[in-house]
Structures are given as structure tokens and as C-alpha cells.
Image 1 (cartoon, rainbow, N blue to C red):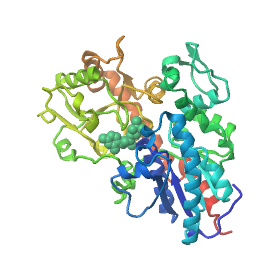
Image 2: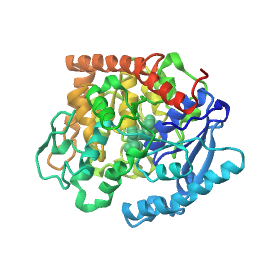
Image 3: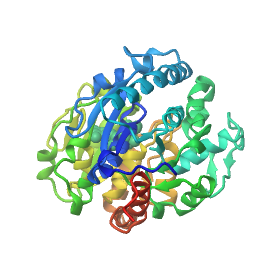
Length: 458
Ligand code: UDP
């Protein structure tokens, strides 16, 4: 952290998220905070991924590098190892060329904020004597699990029923990230996750999209493990913090999908009455499961807004109406706006980390239906530790049946437990707001990071 940048006017940060929706969103939100302090921000994505991005914010510069798979991205590669190896090799070259090009244009890069999913970026930053800040987009508890696998403290494939890791409650094997349980199918996927830690200590800063008050134990453990660790979240569009709304908020959501307007539909629904359903940008839902959700929502008699991505639509039951008195199915929406709407009653979610933080920051109770990856661990924290949701339990075929879903909906919208969960969610919402507001834990950490980038005049 000793490289000081003297002139605040020329401070220029490159943002390099892993090319996936859930990774780009929070890093972009974080950059907004830097931009408001006068930092120039350039978002960098891969050539392939950038073809799918529908809009880049007008006040953010945009550049591309190559991962070696310009036609099909990760799907073009044989497996994650092939993709990661190529991204490292071709990415190192093309990122270096980009930094040189920007330098020649008078846009010297001072700092790279990068995703530890692409750990080699720190080596490029070091070579150019640029500040390197690793930014974790996932739950720090999940990161800690990956770290312990990397350190050999947790063996994969997992053969024990329960694990105990420092600063974390006991976790059962089904609460661990799903890729450990499907290790044999593609071990290189696990490598991608644990390799995040290979050279992490070289980073000048290690930032995470969470806030201290949400999980003090894991934050304390992280800072003990890496002194340069700081919590800087929640980094979500600030329109959620209604007192901090910015007119350019919508501009900051770079998406592969086009949002459909559903706010008008929500406007005339009673307060706290609508069930919002979304499984994020990646999860693919089993056809049988889609049927159970469809009839579960319909038969619950409640209002519902369901995001079914275009690629998933074919799995909807043939007789299911996409628009009716009670329900609306959209391909994609502005989730932030939906969660902030007062008609929202609860959110049936896959428990992606961004969706979790967004709901938490708006005090929306959750019904957890984790599908894969870190979602299983997030669900455990949502239900058992933060107590801001309940779990929809699946049967022996791993399907959540419509009756179960209906019980969960009733429990949240009508029962005493639902009220408790709503209260817990509102408490966490308040803590999240405190953390990000002036003087709060994340606010202080961001200030410290900024001061390192451009120290204040003595
Ligand atoms: N999202 C959105 N509209 C939708 C569904 C999702 O804007 O219709 C956004 C959501 O707000 C979140 C991101 O997409 O910021 C999904 O990230 P998450 O970590 O929840 O899940 P992932 O897509 O990585 O599985």
C-alpha cells in the first residue's frame, strides 16, 4: 500500500470483474463510490462477454481484453481448466497491451480492482507498479471455505458429514458450496475457486462485498489472515438507500438481459402482497421443478412476479398464463426496483450473493431455494444465522413441491414467524445502511482505501 498517487485529478482505476452478471454488478457499484470522489473509472470485460452487454454507463469508459475464446467465452472451452489457462495466458498479454495503450493516450492506470477469480491480474499490476485491489464478490464465509480447501485443511471430495472451520458455525456437508459435491464432474471448477488464494497476499488491498456488522467473526478472521482485508459493502445500487438516490443509478446496471417494465403492474398491488421469484442469471431449473413452482404460485392465490429467463421459458407448463390477474412472468427485470417496491411481500430466491444482499438491504423476507455454487452456503446463513428467511425443503428427487412452497409462502406472509423474519430483515437493513453511510464501518474502509489512492494534503 505504499505506492502513493499524488494528483487526485488523474487517478484512474481499471475494473476487471470475472465475466458474469453477479460479478460485474457489485464491482461496478463499488466503482460508483470511487467515481463520486473524482476517480476516472474504466470497466474492462472480455471480447465475448462484451457482445452481450446491453448498455455500458455513459460516464464509464469501456475496454475489452481477450480470454482466448472471443466467439463463445467459457462455453467454447472444453472445461474450466482450459478456460482459466487460456484467460491467464491471453488475458495477461492483452491486459498488458491495454495498460500500455491507455498510458500512451495519457490515461495512466493507477489501480486495478480485480476479481480473485482471475488471480493473475495482480501479477500484471505488480509488473506495471500499479496498485492492485482484489475484490471478492461472494460471501466471505464462502471464500473462507475455499481458502481452507486451498490450504489443505478441508479435503475435497468431502468425506465427512460436518465441518468446523475457524470463525464459522458448524456446517453440514449439504451446506457447502455445491461444486465440492460434484467435484468428480469437473475438478477444474473447484480449482478456479481455490486458486483465488494462490497469490492473494500480493494484493495491496483485499476488499469484500459485505459489511462488518453482518458477520463480525468472519470479518475479524479475514483481517487477521490478511491485514489488507476490508469490508466495503453492501455495494448495491444506491437507489435502495432511498436517502441516497442518484439519478444515474439505473445506468449502473450493466446486464446481458433487457429488463421488462413491471413497476406499473406492481403499483396497484396491496402493500406487502406480492411474491417475487427469481433464480438469477445462471441457474437452470429442472422442468419438473418449474412445473411445481408454476402451480405452487398459481394455487397460492397470491400475487406473483416471476423472472423466467428467455432460455428457461420453454420449460414453463404449456397451459400456464404469463400474464393473469394474479401473476406476471417477465424475462428479466430491474430487480433493485422490484425489491424496493412496497407491494413486495417476499422473495423466492436462489440465494445468489447479490440477490441476498439486495433483499437484505431492503428488508425483504426470503424463501430460500438454493440451486448450485455458493447458494447452498448462503441459504444456510440466511435461514439459520441471520434468520431473514425460511428454506423451501426439497424431496428425495431434489424437487421443492408446490405444497411445500405454499406452506412457506403462508408462513412468511401470514404467520407469526413471518413477522419475526420481517423484523430481523428490517434490523439488518438498518445495520447495512449504517455501515455504508458517513462514519459507518464500510464507509470508513472505503475512505481508507481512497486515501491510499490519493493521500489528502497534509
Ligand atoms: N437481476 C436483475 N434482474 C433480474 C434478475 C436478477 O437485475 O430479473 C440481478 C440481481 O439484482 C443481481 C444479479 O442479477 O444483482 C444476480 O446476481 P446473484 O449473485 O444474485 O446471482 P447469479 O446471477 O450470480 O447467480
